[in-house]
Length: 312
Ligand code: RIB
Ligand code: CA
Image 1: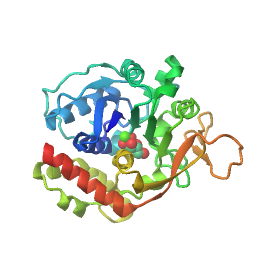
Image 2 (image 1 turned 60 degrees about the horizontal axis):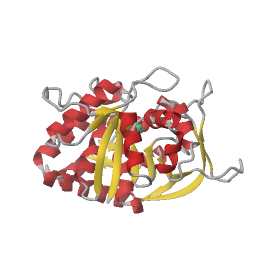
Image 3 (image 1 turned 30 degrees about the vertical axis):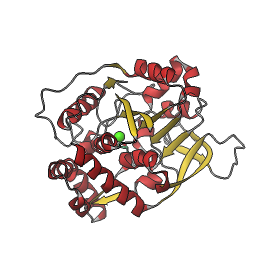
């Protein structure tokens, strides 16, 4: 069993990662924390609560987190995820549960109650973890593992030429988290998430018709964008791959290297710099993905969505 906290900026692919988490029998989901990223935290919190209501899982606890990056204004991704962050889905769901409290307080309570047992899976900007570690730096040694979607190591960024969106939104937070002494920190970067491609026909394998319909509605605009650029109706599943790595580590090959983030540059802010050759001669501080088994990813993705669909 994995004790997990899921930190999200729900968003389209965050929502799919959450659906997978809810159906994974080996995950004990302690709670979900929200952050500003794809959309403002008010909206990402609302989306998360509505999704839980839609899935009949109102018992899962949600804790609201940071409304913006540590040191700069929020630049959201509503142009990609839609103005409500879920491509307009679930807007009609008015009656949904409330938040249980503040994300940072929940982090402190959880990591202190279960020292060395909790894995933090982050699929948005890393602001909440940075704020926790500023307030309680001793917590770093009590976190079992961090698995975070973010970064562009040997590929171009998707938000700026060098910046991937999650890291680029709050690069100072990512920098501080990477240098806080967390022993087991894995960054799932665009290098592999862009290869975690799901094509529209793959959803024909989803058994639960209501889930299949919801996913296709959630993703149609995302796929339109991808098709315009790449002439195929497909979507890179950034956040689902991040969660699936916890459930099936064999999907990725990782290596430990020194990794840092630029956050004080005019043009390369948000650049994730991986020292593959040890040229800085600094202690490796993070695991980075160097290869993906694309077939294994796709099998696991469909299997896990059907597992979730069977219990909805
Ligand atoms: O760059 C991809 C990441 O940015 C994903 O987590 C997506 O949800 C957006 O937050
Ligand atoms: Ca996300």
